[in-house]
Image 1 (cartoon, rainbow over the protein chains, first blue to last red):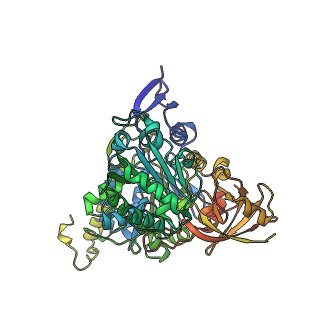
Image 2 (image 1 turned 120 degrees about the horizontal axis):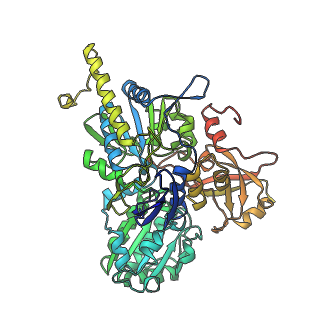
Image 3 (image 1 turned 90 degrees about the horizontal axis):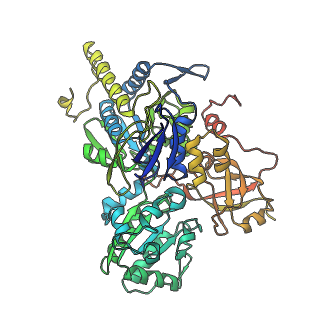
Length: 458
Length: 137
């Protein structure tokens, strides 16, 4: 008898839908049906048992082919790469649980690595702006229950967060928003007339790369100043109309995305979005939220901030003394300057999502991919270590885009013998400790850099 | 009719890319979802392109052949869109304005008809870039 598992969390995007119903075959080995998920979430579950999976680590051979090896051999190889590297980079973590992130951070500290996550090429700019200017945010539940004006700026949830609008922002009926869509004004600001713009009451086609000017114009109007006839491609009358709606809202949320973080200005675009939110709070209640991409990309920011005080771009080359300086300690910049000599790609695909120049630089050195599936990173790696899929085969804590932690569950077992990210990194950590001990026994302990509290090392 | 035009390129997620990515980046679905460029009709006309014609897109740091299609999500003349993924990242400049984030949106590219050329697969592009491509296996 097939089994229905209810209230399952979805390991796709930052909306972290936790209302999925997954039907599993009676032998517990196959996923038969997924209800409530979007097209992408659906694909993740079906992909887990729908085809051939990689079940053993694969090591690149001199002829370019892959040869299957045991997990013990893979752990030994990975630990030796880290041990021998002067400055390894451990990057990714968009798609794993917080337990795996914490274990990877232990490895990074032991290895003296740079530890970075996908925010580095995504919402990293948001962190910089938030450090500078604060984060007047809320939970998605507050938006659902209170918001009567929603702004999507440089974000296209219809494609990137398919159920965001139906669960939290536009369509749901909340405690104080009983009329759902009818009681809300939707404003979409984007250079493209996106599928999200299709459901907007007002769409502003901002000129690409000129978001800062448009935010500035809104701030000027909200503060009672004059603005030019046209700003960033938008007519003055439209800006005045929207500014009036923003001021008269009962509760509003600005959801913003990569349109701000990936364009010229980066963190400054987010900075002024926060300033506009703050200005609007002189009139009514406004909040702002980053449309975080992956289901647990908020996780490493939470876990590593707790462990080291910084959310991403952590330089742990001095081991227990962390520092963070994007532009210097960010993955793509480190790659382009050839400042790292080993690369761990974990739960992401730098092979597909980094600019190809950065991939070429990183590939000059050992490249290890930790991922359940075949991806571009796995296909150029020296070593590919498969792991279980979090949310499908491995349970754990994830952080939703509004920083709410959710306990994900598993609905099936991973393929026989396949381990979790957490177990893998714990084993690599243990092996690293053994390698250090072996060297110490030979009297070849790595000299601790000056100023490092080496006595805290075991 | 121009042989070549300069456009402002942006690259972001599309749902087709998202679904195909989860199915696998070596699948035909991923190839069709990502090896495309969406342009405004005026720019298509300026280049004299027929529907689904292949074009070569070149930026300050690279070049790639993709298929020019009419997108469902319209953009203004002068702006072009390639879905995020392997093909887009052949031309995305790695400069980060000291934030770590590459210039995924808002960089100049030239677009010209790619006469007699083919689109490369994701594997050929990525493995080829690092010297691992061994032809269609």
